[in-house]
Length: 248
Image 1: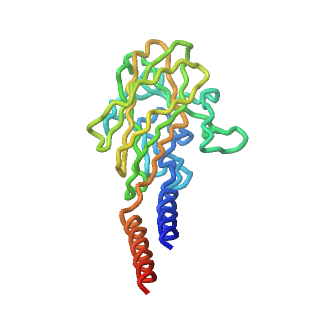
Image 2: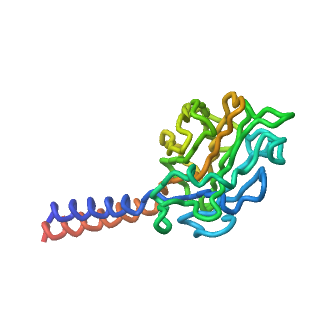
Image 3: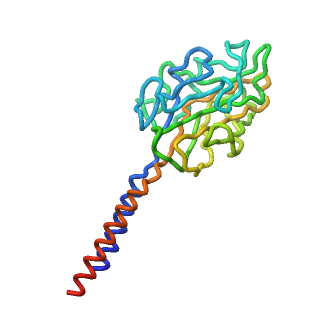
């Protein structure tokens, strides 16, 4: 009987852990982007559904949320949207849609950064923010994205994260060296939080441009203390019943 109680407790604990699956909190395919937008809402999520402008995530390049204030307006600015970059929409299969196996379909926009005639985007920072559902605490955050260059030269992006939008910690540096597009995944962030910011800082751009697409932020929900309390309570009741049965 004691073995049965222990096995039952183990099964309940495993069931609680199984419920803490990795979820897509916020995803951007930039199909909802407007011209040279300095902010873009996420439009993919396991929490709020897939559609236009989900409220639980946003891209910032407007000087807020730890980002730099980029210059707008296409070729004369530091940031623009490239609408002719379907090849850069590298497959990210966790969000399959149609035969293309890509987030972006038609129109296949990406967020592009480049130097303008009177402005330099080198050294500037942009931010992807996710708030999950606004109430659940998450951990084991995974940030992935597709990227491509306008030339075959390599290019670095320094990545950081923050749990308050002000204090950022370095994750590492990604080197982009594929013009036709590649997928990059950052090291897992284990902070427990209900919102997270990922910041990328551009290296020296020169005459080339860099495009980001299919950005995804995943997180694993931290089980509520009440879940483990309930499991512990059931185990205690089982052990009490076992001892009473032995005493009878």
